[in-house]
Amino acid sequence: MGNSTSSSLGMSATAPVNQIQETISENCVVIFSKTSCAYCTMAKKLFRDMNVNYKAVELDMLEYGSQFQDALYKMTGERTVPRIFVNGTFIGGATDTHRLHKEGKLLPLVHQCYLKKSKRREF
Image (tube, rainbow, N blue to C red; front, top):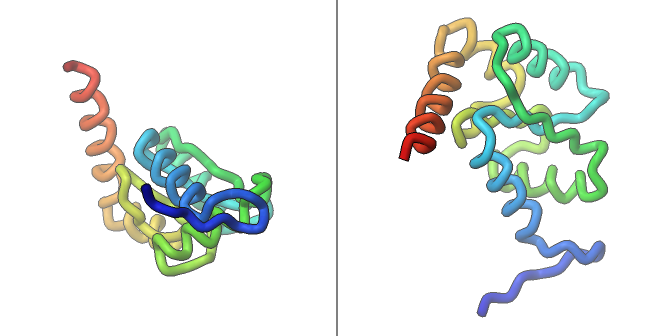
């Protein structure tokens, strides 16, 4: 039915967005990161310190990492990493996430996701 534009690497323009959305919907916490990024390390450490499981997608380790970063830019308005999603919602980068934690708002967002997932399993 619809046409999708292909990139020069053969990956359709919608493929990264679809993969990102799928990853976000399947995981309570997703951190789009780069292995060399100090802010990314800081964000991952925050979730580890809170004993919260997260899915890290290391863009610099992916063959199509730059296309993923382009898609994240379209979704969030910035290309910087980390790009952090909790409960399907973009919450920002490392600084935004630390601020939410200091305000006591981060853990409730995470808990909402786990509650939602456990309720889905009951049916």
